[in-house]
Image (cartoon, rainbow, N blue to C red; front, side, top):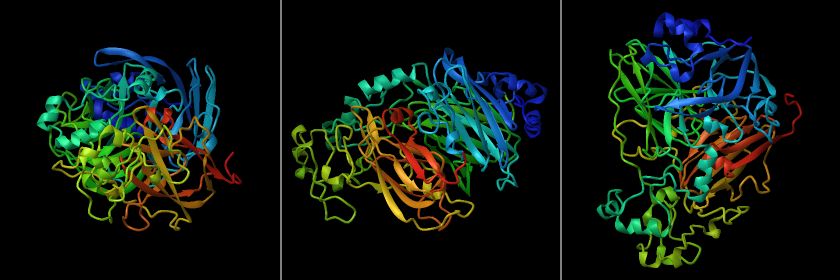
Length: 601
């Protein structure tokens, strides 16, 4: 039966954290649970073989304002579901809405009929009906769950999952906290999407001013600024939706509410950090406290000590910290465009706080983020109407001619970065594609945007090394290239120039086929790409046979990412950008793995 309180181990942990009153926490809404009020900081938790979930409408209050949320069991975020590797689980989901809903178990390896994507793996859950998901738990780690219906995810329909290993956990820790990062707007997500379609820069309040242009506050020369202007592109267009409408949350708490997690000095504290936001990439740091990354996307990695990491939408990272002093620390999750932050506190006692650092300077896109490798590689004198001559570009090409800005008028550029000569066979180079990267680079070893010059240690993807050997070490039998495309002015997004609402062929794999997939980002926006039902191995150049396993990877602007995939899960699987508005606007497809013989039914 469903359990609304915690398992024995969690109860004991709570007794340390909050005393006798902690046992009441399962009855409290998530927004009322905070160490700063003397209550336990853990999320309400469901466990056992049978879990009951009800999707419904709830008021949600943050920063002194109350809005309308879609929640599970009345809380935001939804309850923590805690399971154990090797068990079977039966999750009964009752839809209390007046519209269809669904739950996708993000990162969980399940039969495709249980994956929870309407129109792909099941019909969805009709209003006032109940659907039962049932599957064996085949893995352990930190995961999460969310709606795949009607932008409900942006309204609070998401929650964490922790799966304890069947055997000994290789990660040693004395206490843990689950931290769900998210973004919240009092504006309905359909209205946000409508505004983006009419004016993609609607939420961008960080554009360079005229005085800033003259003073060079963004570090660009006047010539570079003029070039960006003639391309009708903004080098500070970092995030489509940002702190001008979003409040950034940790476990449903805004910065003012200050969620607090407790520790005893000297303890090893495991922080399970989940980015459950709709549209927000975060840079996470704890000033004064080093973090050791031990797990990425639910898979253990060789420990690596860092001071800051970037977590894209739908990724998870587990870090272990060991605060030795009797003092508070501020955990900062700063939006990638520096328009706001989520903030929490780690402290020995509930009433303690630490200094909250100010927002840092807004980062600026470069020509490298356009997949051009830098200004020096551009021969603008060769630009013709509607196209660009990139013959002088590339890593091994001849020395570039001087930049001829005089040839860059609207007639020469026509704000159209497309060059059909660069387009791969099969790409639809229509109105949905406004640029094609001429020289996309593998940037897995580069520091993420905005963190290039910080004076401390920053996690990069090439730091990640799988703790266990990769299960399938066969070389790939074929290669596949997929382009991430878009038209930023029209807010159109897709794969290979096509959005999902058009007639799009699914991506087909033979069962157990080994494929090397390269994602090429032809846009100036980051795209966290998620494949359902599988983990893939990032090709990082790290130790052979220990490539890091991921279910979601952030593909930086103008870059390419390569991974090896064993298509071992028969069925139909969603494959999409996890920026919710990008997915909704077309960056979605279906991966189909056949034959089905022997698949779970």
